[in-house]
View 1: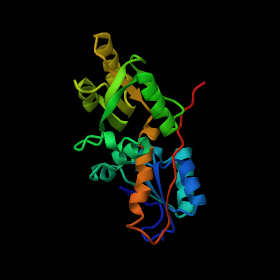
View 2 (view 1 turned 90 degrees about the horizontal axis):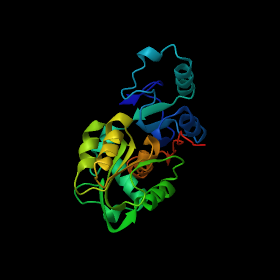
View 3 (view 1 turned 120 degrees about the horizontal axis):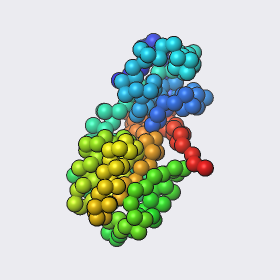
View 4 (view 1 turned 30 degrees about the vertical axis):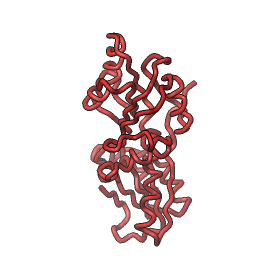
Length: 239
């Protein structure tokens, strides 16, 4: 889905790829001379960028005015990038983590590691590689992790619960999920005696590297304008 506050024939001087087209990202893209932003997540706060109830909202108007004033275009590149073979987000995340050799040939979100790693060390590795400021973990810190499956970004009750319930999986890695759904299920699994873990990275950092890879993927197709990855800032911090 494309959003085009500027006319459809607006000349594109440069392209920025990003995980989320926040106002901060739009400003940095503009400063870098990139007036087209290809974003994985919506620009205006809902999956379909529905703005009917926002038309009189000051923050929405400020962001829209910035986009219009600077002749910028935002392009929502979500389903098609996930539908790419292999999944563009999954490919970028595996590359960033250095997990390509551990990924299943049929499922790039499924990983089998040659040696088991305690959950605490496993999580520290993720935090370090993805430069995460905040992370939440459910499970015994000493639980050996040998097989992991990821659902990058948001995961709903289904397929989140079936993924975690798989007999061959030690840990499910997600961006975010509702606490009364997959998180509560993970707690109940552990209380019932199952050796399981759940890691919540945060939505932005859990798909960010997929849009970094998107910039590389685009360059051979669009050589006439510069293309740059502009990372979205992780929104959370802890005391």
